[in-house]
Image (cartoon, rainbow over all chains, first blue to last red; front, top):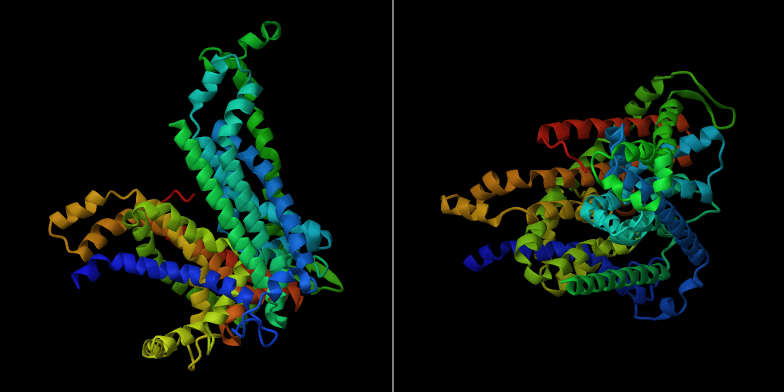
Length: 264
Length: 319
């Protein structure tokens, strides 16, 4: 009983961990299912079919391609614009600072359905047809704040003496930026870009408001499939995404720990 | 000016020194605005302006075929509220319940990771964000597999002869009205379970960031002064963790209120949330003013909630 009390927080913590991860295990396991009907909700029999024929279902790989394309363009654009804003906030004094911070915070505190629908009313009022471009505009908009917050934290943690040291060593401003500042901020930019990509790639609600039937992203495809019948290939994509991202994180951790060990 | 151009490169490092500040200040004056301009313009045009266009759309009358005119028709608001207040109320209740549940589940987990996980800390943190790596629609669909009548949960309890736990749990849920028959799936319980699941990391991460800095010695000191564990939690841990709690509850409650993916995939027609109504009015019924009015009401509710909540919790720093 005393043992139970001492370890209660660990037991509860591990149970919550299980709650967080259980759906991922289900997604992976059911990518090897051969369902009896149209829906992949009940285990039937083990099969590699979906893995050997990933693009076998019509439309899915096209939607995947569109999501990748939008994710890459949106995250890179948001990274460039967001990094500029982050530097302005981290490095300069200027008027309207509070207003700027508020404008950056607001999109993160607004429900997606409000952002998606309000953007749609703008496109309707301006007579702009929805499609690939409007999805891109929306994605860059909601990715921006997250990039800014991520990069700003990195800029703020920079030691200003490093740039002064570069200047003392006769580096001009451009050289100091390229050789000292940028490499130090780069991990923050990379993290912000990856975050933006994953937000863009995974977004359904805002996208659904600003898409057209000819611009179906992967989450929209999955949404439609949930009504029509879920092909096993969806789980294959889910599994690949999960393992791929996990690999990126592990490699990143190993690299950064090796670098910090070298630094010491 | 001429001196500056003549001096050229060797003088460039000078800005770091005080007294020479005149030149860089004047030259740097427009730099931050140039850096801000594209990003902030994007947010103004595609975030702020749409809010105005949403407000304007909600006060217009007309239809899709003949166009709309701004008539300041506030009746749309009262009509929309009169028709859809149950869905609005339900969204707030579901999101509120899910927020309390994420707090109840997230607090022990954040404490465990911050203070009891030893060298597995980073590993566990990666596992907390790992679910994000798979599309959340796919993960939400996985709950259908888990909660279904002959789903994994039912199979697991049957296999381990713990069905009595599951049926006990079900009768509790039945008693509080979260399920209406013997079915777990397609019920308010399933929707709240999905919302809790989807937003749990948003609660755990700020809580972890906060609890990690909490000095363990304060808890020990409370124990030395004869505080029971419950008292130590109430008087020491909880007040110190409030900033994390505020951040976590905002990050959970706001998106959960507008979410309709969980209520569509895991709920029934009895669990319709307001996001679902807005989506349907905009994209299927094509009643733009009603949809815009509902969307605007949701926005106002959220703003009112955030302002009062943050004021009462007493934390001004949000980001």
